[in-house]
Image 1 (cartoon, rainbow, N blue to C red):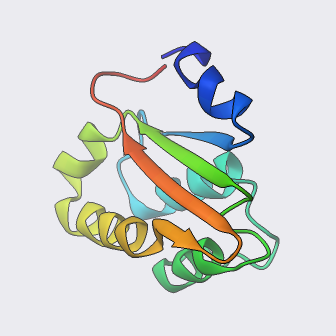
Image 2 (cartoon, helix red, strand yellow; image 1 turned 180 degrees about the vertical axis):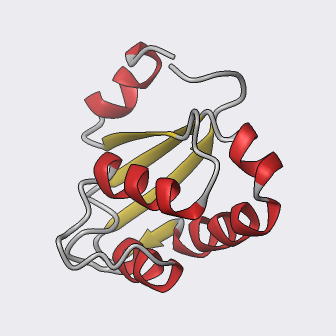
Length: 114
């Protein structure tokens, strides 16, 4: 996946972060990829509660006017660790939406990694 499809989103002032999960087969690797891709704060504890806290933190979370999180290469992780993937999806679902500081939108890209 190339960045071009998201240029219009960027032109509208949104941040676009790509979370590439290609090759991720466990929670520890998932958390490392999330921390790096989203440039999460140092206090990110690399667990589900900390992820939910970061995504909901008005100082990090949705940017003004918005942040688009594009998740690629997620299928292998979802297949190997369905319970973990379900938890990740729950957190993303709860975190997505509009708030006083902007919007967080999550896009699960079909197909391979970029």
